[in-house]
Length: 124
Image (cartoon, rainbow, N blue to C red; front, side, top):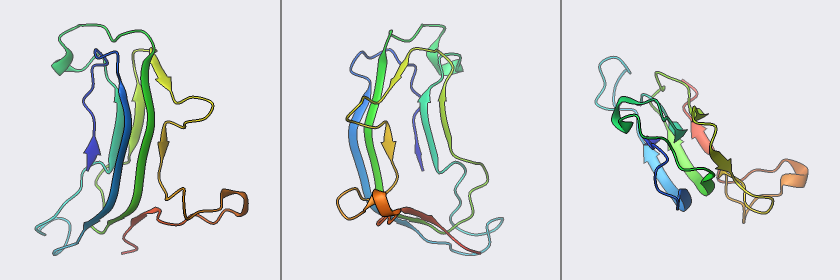
């Protein structure tokens, strides 16, 4: 659904993006339905990917302030989400800005574990 094939070559990195109010309905069984989901979230740098052409990532490639909120994915994903870095050069968030958030920060109270607007998967 939200996947990056980033080689980490842009010094501006991947930051300050919000995906909100996304609904993916289940239209029939996973193996024969109209909708399918492979990887819900795949975020990071895969320097060894075929699409990178052996070009190294920039040092301290920032990934931060990615917000995913109010998302409902009803088809069962065929793979798990992945947060990855095979370059060792990703700067994951900062003290004040996390890398990725999977809930609505404005409506949640993390001190009481009350997370609103979270990413939800089908219970089927």
